Length: 325
Ligand code: ADP
Image (cartoon, rainbow, N blue to C red; front, side, top):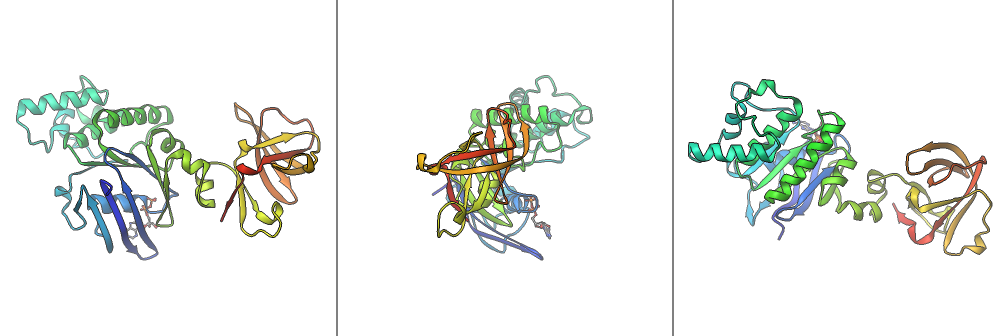
């Protein structure tokens, strides 16, 4: 049984129904991604106990906690909005809620400040902190309560990009040092790819896919997951395989470009699109991203060189083409 098990969890609002099932192992770093409004925050609120589900169960470490009070769940939370007590200094914010003796509390909060990279900040007033520092203090305070699980809801979305990158690395490092199970909501795919052990994808209130970043990228089970985890091309299957329904999908890096027409009979292992018109050509550092049009359908592919003609041929290894719906 997983450490945290969410089984048929349901929450109904007027125009929205959440329905979630998944499991998280002890010590796992799970990122939850999905479009805005897909139910990520609702799911965290239900797990934390801030909200009551209409059905289903939440089991933590073998115990059903679905009806348990917030305080007795042992779940810590870090949110996007800074929720520190402005009248207390950094140290007292971190020590708030700790049950240890005074000297011990001091030792722990000093160690936590070091862990989050804020050594020497103990006596600073909360109002003097930058956004990134305040988020680090929030993190230290949440960890101080020794949670069994830490929930983080877009904790870095108010910060600028370089700071987000540096703090997210610290969060992952803290996870690895302490081994705390973490559920981290983000709308940023790159962030989820870089810090997670596994990723849960939500769509219209449902948990639709779960796996490592690489599994979801290379073997998405449906078109939504395919496009949510990266760029690609989806075409009607009949364009490629006779009498086929549904769609095919491939990633831009799996397409090879030729400036000459290709004879399909010479390449039985490949699917060939000759005379694809180039609509756009963008340099993106490691390659050019070409936006093509083939028989009225858009195709996206990568090319190491910039094509000189207005049309190109595209060849894709059959085994890197997925049939999805
Ligand atoms: P996400 O975090 O993925 O952006 P949310 O969980 O915040 O999505 O919201 C999912 C849906 O649930 C939205 O349509 C939102 O309007 C609705 N919702 C969330 N909380 C409430 C509430 N307290 N009352 C009514 N609708 C709500």
